Length: 272
Image 1 (spheres, rainbow, N blue to C red):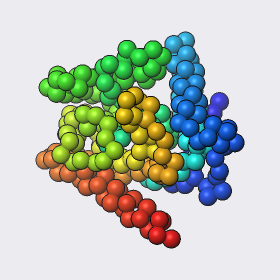
Image 2: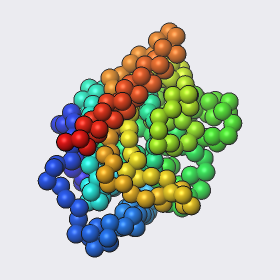
Image 3: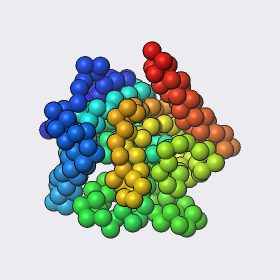
């Protein structure tokens, strides 16, 4: 049985007293310390899923290991808006957010799963990855091609609506790929359309996870940047307006506003 790292909290900040682990120092702050630990958690999670035992508590426990791994590697985590998740009372929503790295999918269960059951829209090719396939299937992820927008929209609206009607929230990353910057022009309306179709609210999510960056030669094994804070912020849920573009713009404004504020905070911190 796992404990919830953020139980009763509206926000969280890695304590100032937190220090890198001795093991990370002994590995000379190498990214490979992070990846071997992360892959071991990934293996354990996949093996548990393959045996049909990856339930809520197990998902939270494995995801929490990744939270603590980030902090052992010198990362600072800042989370805001947990009250908006708690106030849902377990009711389903479509969470729409930007997509920056593999880190978010590794830690979101620790942050969100206490409050709501949820699933992801994912690239179909991920179902071919050993162990990851079992993890995705365990929480009924919806696979899309990312090459045929019309077919992807049909799949998300059909399967996503079934999930929402069954009480499970959906997390949608409207960008076609992971990016370390937020570009509103690449942020499509698929999540808003799903929420409108199912008659549920949209809850905006802004995140900054470039602590783990994309690799030059091995995309999923990029370098670590402990100096870059890991940030998650959730906004209040919004009913989809009659003109859904209005809700889409409000979601974009929320994410952009978070990025602007974070940039100012980091600039001020460096000048101290």
